[in-house]
Amino acid sequence: MKTKAVKIFVAVMLIAGFFVLTACSDANDANEANALINTGAAAQGTENPAVTPPAPQELDPEELDKRWLTDRAGRFVGIPHEITTIVTLGASNTEIVAALGFTDKIIGADTFSEDVTGITHDVTLIDMWNMDAETVIALDADLVIAASDLFFDNTLDLLADAGTAVLFIPTSNTITGIYEDIQFLGLALNAEAEAEDIIRNMHEEIERIQTIADSITISRSVYFEIETPPFMFTFGAGTFLDEMLQIIGAENVFRDYGQWVSVSDEQVIAANPDVILTNVGWVVDHVADMQSRPGWNGLDAVRGNNIFVIDANSSSRPTHNIIIALDQIARAVYPKYFGPPACRIVAGHRF
Image 1 (cartoon, rainbow, N blue to C red):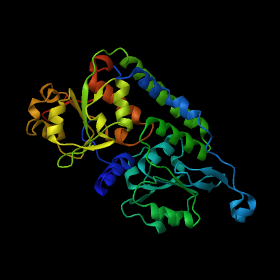
Image 2: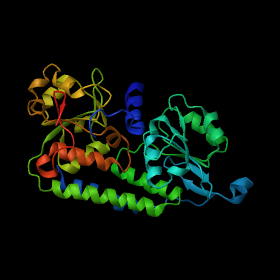
Image 3: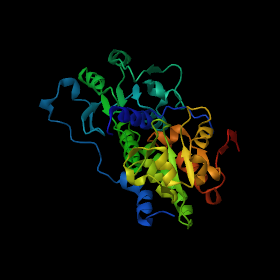
Image 4: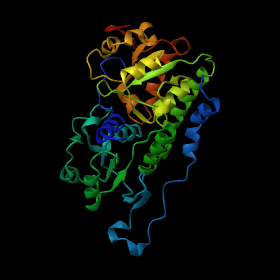
């Protein structure tokens, strides 16, 4: 990220995944695509993140009876053997913890997690833009699971210094990273079997889609818009969204431009994608807006009415739910092979 604004935007898109969706929800390199499928098994075979605890003389008495882990940010953290209360900060963390079966133990979560299945009105919602350490400390949770690369790292350090067990989970940009996040949280919560089931389900769905994609002989080009003008954004290589386009055998027209890319009308027009995807759901009739942009009426995607809305949460949060977005993307780009899209919008009308 070259500017603070870009960093904030990407953090919001990937961790919070909070934008409200208003609509419904041939690989370039076969070896690379097959490698993507196999990342689940690779992740499960990684070195166990549990580490040997420090020497007893280095610990305070109350720290002797803890499980010691190296978290995803490389920090050495002692957590209770029995975890009865959890605070999750970052909607991706909340989704994974919920999928592992611990919604009943979540007593606090960030406001962007409010729509995660299982989060009830009893859960204390925490404003990530103005996070108050005292609010989290007052919850007295056994464990805080936090997205470490947002803008409240100092606040989380205060929590850790106060004796709260805080596990940091940096944003995972790749599918392999998502597998490893799930595996780690399964270990931390004594739910390794549940984590393996989630990863296996992801693995099987990716393999199903890849098998179909292997039969596709003509690759289609895609522009995926994740922010509107005047700050149009998309993504390139090094992101799980780009990996998903590779899995279905599509060509990301901005793949060679870096992970997160600010683009212009002229660049999109020059790329002339076959299909346009977007997960922008906070703009009223965003598709009609794209169709009306100067020069866009000549794009193949616009002329062919190939503009589709992809679920915002599953395409922006690095969790097991990316397979929902993957299925939607596959259907939008290659309906002949994967079935009709979940939602097509043409001039403001859904089909």
